[in-house]
Length: 108
Image 1: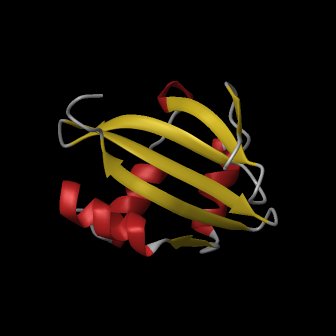
Image 2: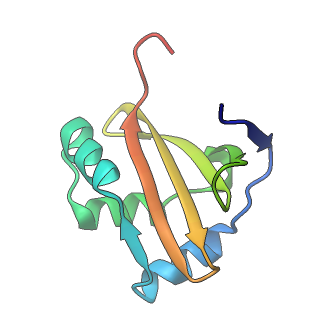
């Protein structure tokens, strides 16, 4: 059973996220890429623009699975009029990973 720890402040600063993108120190998981294309018709460049455009008010929560290293910051924002959930993490302080990029479910 996966146990989770949550907090209501981001683990990662958005200026660090942008810096890693600008230095090309990021990767987009296949899941994030697939869901961004399917739900929002976004290619890699569009995904990057949406991440750079994140603001503090988009932050939802930060979670940590005790069975995995690191934290995941979750954000919610509207993209093309649709609510999107975005999860990111930074590995070893040096690599931004865009974990998921999906549409909010209709029932919540």
